[in-house]
Image (cartoon, rainbow, N blue to C red; front, top):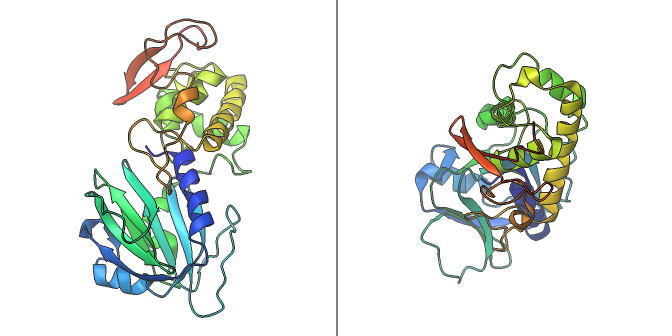
Length: 296
């Protein structure tokens, strides 16, 4: 948490609120939040004076193209391919477990878990709040390949909304993997951005038990699973993501998908389809929720 729908919800909010705004400065309250450069002063100096052109999402990463100089007017380009070397470099963010990006006025009370403050034109702030402190931010200078700095990007599989996410692609990724399908779906080198909540939901909609070994998943089930992954992600994005613990969008509003979840976090309740009791097991240290009647 947050997963792809939550990160996409944040991206859309950032593109509505921050595009074409100049970063006038910043304040780092927890140094280890800045993953690159190693110098906090260099990070602040690097982004100050840049204008945010657009925000992209790759998996669970948020990536802002930065522009430099007068006349640099950004437009909302996502999900079109990003420029390889934007003139102001890149600002990268990963929310990890508890990260939040909140759009606030400077005079608003500083949350005790605020880690980074970015000051923007017209008296606005973008604050990175992170209770567990696993979240990270990067500044990638102009002319530097983004994957050479944010190395996790190079390990990502294709995005579920990419044209490359075909039945054949998913079948090839699952082929010869002798581990539970739920565990495989959480691997970011199989499907980028998918996490615990939506893997459970997609498996339910496709009728596949989470502990089914990948090699035992039938071709028809792979087809159903691909469709289900896209559907549950689209549904959650429309609902503004899921808030089971602390996810908020940039305006500080909870996500609403939890109210319509099929199985996730519903152990002991009745299945909405067949009425059987939703079960919960542990797989690879993560909770998995399923209906023993609808999934097999």
